[in-house]
Amino acid sequence: MIIIGLTGNYGMGKSTVARMFGDLGAVVIDTDDIVRELLKDSAVIYEIKKAFGEDIIQKTGINKKLLAEIVFEYPHLRISLENILHPRVFKKIDEEIAKITDTSAIVIIEAPLIFERGYQNRFDKIITVYALEEIAIKRLKEKGISEEDARKRLKSQFPIEMKISKSDFAIDNSRDIENTRRQVEEIYSRL
Image (cartoon, rainbow, N blue to C red; front, side, top):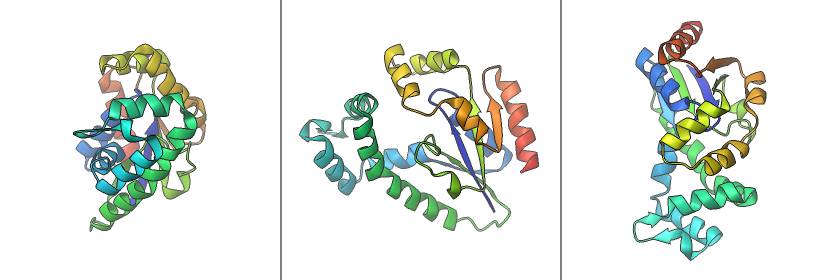
C-alpha cells in the first residue's frame, strides 16, 4: 500500500484531481469530508464554542461562514481551529486506511495543509496540484467566495511554488480537463 498526500492551494483543483485518481482505482480520502462530519460532533462543537465564543453557534450547528471569515482574518485563530480538528482528522484517516485490505492499494489523501502544518512525513509521496492564481481566484468566485476572501485564503497558505518544490509530483491544472487527466494517468501508472 502506498499513501499519497494530495495537496495544493485553494481553488487549484485538488478535488477534481482526486476524483480522477479515484476513477483510475485509487482509494480517495477527502479531509474536507472528514471535517464536515467533525463539525457536527458535539465534542468538536463544544471545543470550537469554547475557543470562538457563543456567536459561532447557530441552531443548525456551527456557523461555517462566520468561522471561515474569522480564521482567514486571524491566523492565530486558524491555528486554534486546526489544533482542534487535525488530530481527529488524522485519527479518522488512520481508521479508514485500516479498513483497506488490498495491500497494493494506492491511497490518495486530499489535504490542503500538508506543508503548512509539517505533515509531509505522514505520506509516502506527495502530489501538488497547481494552477495560475488568477484561475484559482476565478474558480473560488464561481463557488460564491468574493475576490477579497479568495485572495485572503490563498495568502493564508504557503506559496504554491514552495509546495511544488517539496513534492514528488506536480500536476498543472491551469489548462483543459483532458490535459489534467493525462498528467493524472501518467502519475498513477508510475505509482
